[in-house]
Amino acid sequence: MLLLWLSVFAASALAAPDRGAGGRRRGAAGGWPGAPNVVLVVSDSFSLALLPPAMWSGLFTHLTESWNNFKGLDPNYTTWMDIMEKHGYRTQKFGKLDYTSGHHSISNRVEAWTRDVAFLLRQEGRPMINLIPKKTKVRVMEGDWKNTDRAVNWLRKEASNSTQPFVLYLGLNLPHPYPSPSSGENFGSSTFHTSLYWLKKVSYDAIKIPKWSPLSEMHPVDYYSSYTKNCTGKFTKKEIKNIRAFYYAMCAETDAMLGEIILALRQLDLLQNTIVIYTSDHGELAMEHRQFYKMSMYEASAHIPLLMMGPGIKANLQVSNVVSLVDIYPTMLDIAGAPLPQNLSGYSLLPLSSEMFGNEHKLKNLHPPWILSEFHGCNVNASTYMLRTNQWKYIAYSDGTSVLPQLFDLSSDPDELTNIATEFPQVTYSLDQKLRSIINYPKVSASVHQYNKEQFIKWKQSVGQNYSNVIANLRWHQDWLKEPRKYESAINQWLKTPL
Image (tube, rainbow, N blue to C red; front, side):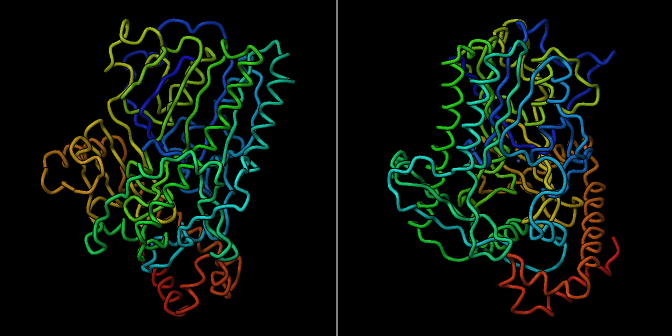
């Protein structure tokens, strides 16, 4: 097999340097062999140790204004798959997509819209584990297996007999935590769920328990995230280790699904002419930094795998460049031989992965040496912006002044436990200036605040004066029901406060 490891970040956006005079195409130098088939498998929550609209649009989040999981791309938005279809590819999608507007529960929407309100409410169930009774059960996530079977059957019955090149997309829910009914009507997903079959594949003794900063020393945004994710209580070492073990077991099941796709391609004699790409929409903290889930710029949440194999891909190459999911769009178009639109934020990854790598190309010219990621959704009470290089990670919040930034030297502090923003003011200033040259993040944050308030007002009006009773039945109901007047007052104060 031809295999490529890229160090990839689940970034909501990637800022790209200028193309130079004439708008030179930022793709592979020269042609790409033939018109290969493409299979893209994207799982949920697979950490290497950030939002899908960037992958499908190829643009910054603030350009598409995909502020949260409810507000994604317009249903008529032209994706890379649409363009590949116009260039002669037969296309097929199975499983989870999650990039158009209108998805996710009322809880998720209201939580995202009210994150600016001055209150703390637990939005998730406490993270827990659940071992199913049947010890030998292999197909635990039945929905994902069903979609995997559908993809394999399509390859056997349709793709293998097609005269056109094809592009197949398979979206998986695993290894995302499962829904937790105990969290209320619009329950969150905080249960790590597997069978003994998969758990036996995990080396339990090798699992490390992550270090935590004391609650009193946590960054204020981190504390908010930990609280809303119901993680500020006490956890035993065994609880933490079990959560991580179950998560790894879920990753193993995900890997088996990818294996089924590759096996089918091999059996159908399609593998030698098919580029297979695997990645994830974001990672999983799995109790690192006293959190589970995502919504964070820490490595476990933002650093994900990207694997590529197929014709023209250099074998056994691991590329350490920081790249982004926003690069998927130009990469797909480059594979198809389609022109790259001038407004794309990403870069084709083919030059980094090709047989020509290290010979005809200079590393610094293939991809910018940094990426930009941004997040504006729930469980985080300030718009968050990350500028990442190989060594440094700079995280700015909101307007850049009301919330302290974070700076981590990943070469000496891979666990990101020591914020050195004040110790290295020149580095902090330089990275912040670079960030501001890419995106006017205080202005973007203000736009998000305005959007959140407008959307909440519309929702509040749609449910009438009993909106508090509606909230009382959402997944944050346990806290709300204790002091509803207190939280109603906080919302009213927020609505009165001008931006």
